[in-house]
Image (cartoon, rainbow, N blue to C red; front, side, top):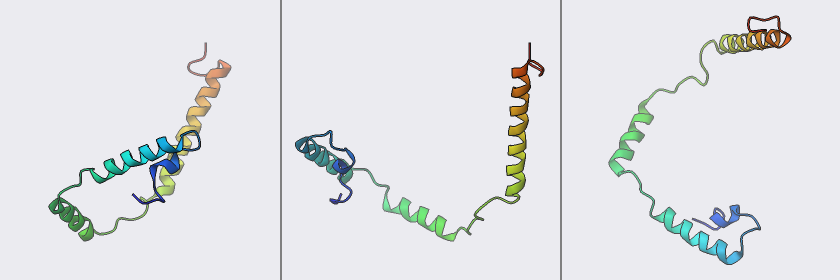
Length: 92
């Protein structure tokens, strides 16, 4: 880890400097000893993603989906409002 992305920079002012330095040492040890996938697995994953065609950035007919979810949400809010007035299907 470099100085710019040290763990103690995220702790704030509540932690004493010697405790922050100790936490930085632990964070450095954990970062250095973290397990990494085997190079063969990384090469397989890289090859798979480099040969796949790019996906479209958004689904087809996105506006229809947004309108359908919005309409369903408004209908549910309407049913809830009717229930609160006592006139809806669940009103007492």
